[in-house]
Amino acid sequence: MGVRVALGASRGQIIGLVLFSVFRVTAIGIAVGVGGTLLLGRVLTSQFNAARPNDAIVIAAVAALLAAVAILASLRPAIRATAIDPLAALRQE
Image 1 (cartoon, rainbow, N blue to C red):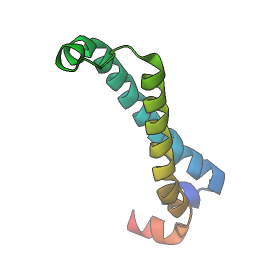
Image 2: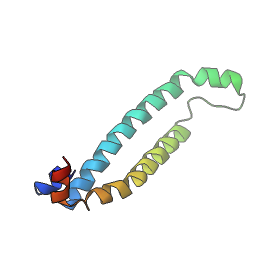
Image 3: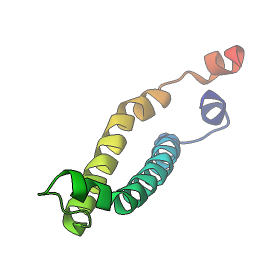
Image 4: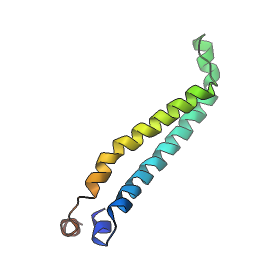
């Protein structure tokens, strides 16, 4: 990040870069989780009588909540990345 700042990246570009990389990993995790939920739904139904394996509203709500938490959790490090002194970053790298 320090090299990007030293090369003239704006604060918005750095924050966008961090948030995009976090969102990409989160989206992959959510896709794997939803796929696992749909595949293992029958096992859950046999173990828990009240479980409904393909409840789309619950799956979508949990996926949206996880995405929101991941993005909010990455905001502070993204903002801290913009405060890097370009000269100090170049000296360390």
